[in-house]
Image (cartoon, rainbow, N blue to C red; front, side):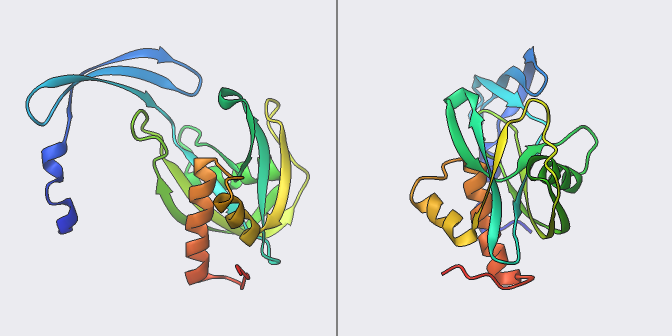
Length: 196
């Protein structure tokens, strides 16, 4: 049974009349669609198909988390980020999460938990990001891809949360992943972490 907060949702549905792929890249596919609006009119919708991704918050027993610093070309800035990466074709998200954590940070996770998911850019993409928390961590040599340049940043979990509040962490997936993991950890903590 649908919750009453969704009662009028069917009145908002836009239906695809036709779809035309405009660009097919290695990662992104760009489409221009003609869509039927709820009032019977039509409109153009430009959107990007994305394979989906996973983001991981690796939590150590001392209450620290592993972030990475990475330069992002579109906005010409270095960002603090959680380890993350795209889902390969046919790959279960949990496999992606474990693989990306090891590749980007050199961490092998003994335990991992699905925290939830979110859509980072619903106005123009179907991208979904699955969030995991990882613990029982073993530090291995880093094994980044040839085109990835990263610096590990192991910091207290509570400091990472403060960095969000202070505007130091501004990457959306990192903010969402840290906040959702923090909420999950407070309710389900496999071991105690001080957040004060």
